[in-house]
Length: 208
Image (tube, rainbow, N blue to C red):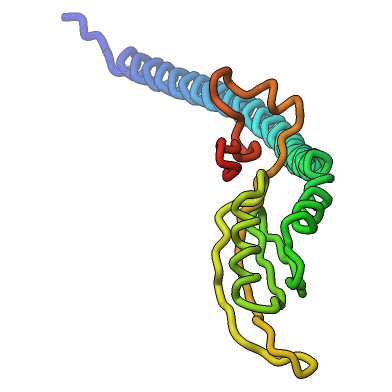
């Protein structure tokens, strides 16, 4: 009977399987390291690209903030210039208003009445003065009410005072001054309706 010793053959197979296992393990380690390296490189590339984009956006945002500040300054300067322009236009439009006011007061103040002060706040005028009597104050108020540019006389206060041993009436009254419109404003007014701020119409009896 022939006997075959299989131990060396089995030992060789075990050795071959161990070598194959070690080779596969090494290959897997190499592939894993390669995959990790590629992933790390790609992620770093994405991160670097995003950081570059963020830096660019920050730079552009800084430039936009500066431009916005410049626009705000220009807007403020424009508003200031427009405000000055409106003030100048208003002064030019009303430059003769004070002259008209004093001329009209000179015409309407009767004899025996002396004005101490004339104060204007917009279109409201406050008169303070002395009169020989209360009747003179009444005459003044009627004259002012009949004026084409002065209206609504309102007596605020009247009291008796003594000046240089003479008994006089110290009075304070308010009136409304109607601004005279320029020819351009008159032309721009709607047809069939008198422009706002024009002189009062005169009735047939001579009163406004």
